[in-house]
Amino acid sequence: MTESTADRVGTVVTHRRYVPYSHAHYAGNLVDGAYSLGLFGDVATEMCVVLDGDEGLFASYSDVQFKAPVRAGDLLEITATLVREGSRSRVMEFAVHVVGRGAPTPEAPGAAEVLDPPVVATTATGTVVVPPASR
Image 1 (spheres, one colour):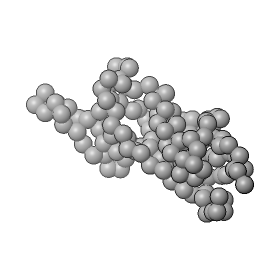
Image 2 (cartoon, one colour):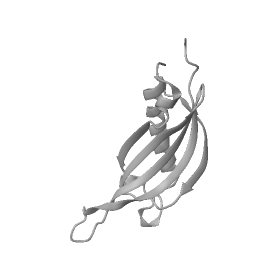
Image 3 (cartoon, helix red, strand yellow):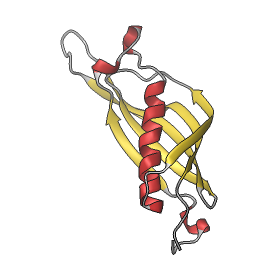
């Protein structure tokens, strides 16, 4: 590792994802909260690969908050921001933003809209661990 910890803190990884209708579990095309947690795992994995050259392993979540529904047909933006780095641990803050949403009508079954501003659906803090750096 040539970068200092201070240079790496603040690193952001962003993914975008369309939520297929096959993921709806509840009335109103709602998607279960575990869907967001799985997306957090995806951005955390990329963060570990980018920073450490290893996929890392999730150790824990804290302060998970479901603030707004995620629905089938949503367009999501998922971010991970590195907020603290130990010798093997990486603490990240996560957010799922709904940036677009399906808005079908009988006349336009594929209609959708961009949400401005986006809706914060889920937030969390999580810790991942990576193998010790080889020196």
